[in-house]
Image (cartoon, rainbow, N blue to C red):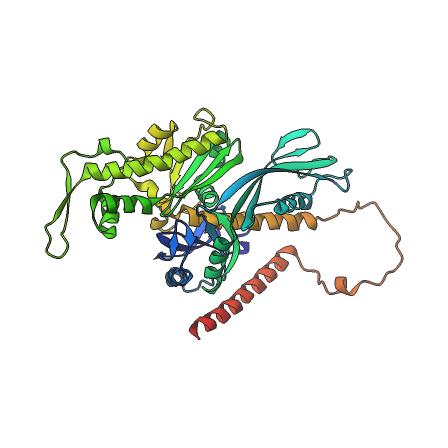
Length: 457
């Protein structure tokens, strides 16, 4: 893929504590070059769900404004959006399809058709299918195939992981994005976005669990033998820890957040017994002395609860510490808590490490984006490129050149060339692609100008 051909893809992470917009493009080495970055404090979102649409729109527009300020030449129209919340559910299905022409090799469109058939799966009323992810394919009696394109057989099938969400919650996300002057290219489950940003192929093969500890939720994705085995959204995150501190120690929310970030620890045993934090009193009241050990005990209690959920979900799919050789990768803003790795290893029995999205970033990236809290947003861009590559592959397969042997001469009668074919000039492939991308860019600029006019009005 030429550098000039790569589209600019924008990820929009609508979180409980922050909204981040990042624009990126892959360079010739396949690494992400960040072309724009903006963030804003989030309000209107609770536990990953958009509740107050007006407040969410203001926060999205502020994040976009900051993104434009970082790069005034940017034109943002379509975005990949992350979705989370305790309304997210997943189920396993199996689908099979008898092929129309078993004499030929399996084509990409047949796999897409098999996948689309799963979108008709019966799900509870009020829910909607967000994503259908194939796990492993089978062709006739051959099992555990990663990609069946090119295989030959009468019947092709697969096991699928289907992710569903509440229809109203999904509608609220679309509404907030649309009214911010953008269109949603695709909704992506946040743990899958985070996983693509912090995980390598080796991790996937070894078996690994990704835990993204966000503000409102903690999102889990479990991979084993290169297959997505399980996803879950745990309805607790950093906000819950802050609220626990606020209630337990009788302080303001802003003070609780500041204490958690500056002095917080996930292990009470590691906190100093004789260390205290002084909090100024309200309206002439005496200052308050807060024990660092008590603070750590409150954090540990809530983090242990989240990690107990993780252990439960891993056991649900029949995996344990021996199966997941890659251990647990912790990411998201909450992963920056001191001593969290030790608590995770103690609670789950798995090795743990912090997942940073550095592997996919080009060397000249913004230092701020190294933080695990931006893993989801960068993962959304990678998801966009995955879709782009898939469509590119489909296009290539559809228009494969048929080579005619040079020594083969066929006398054919003169035929009238259809008008459609006459209209196509003979240009080389690169010129055609460049022309397409120029037209695409001009269309984007026109669209962006229209959106800008609407905002000004």
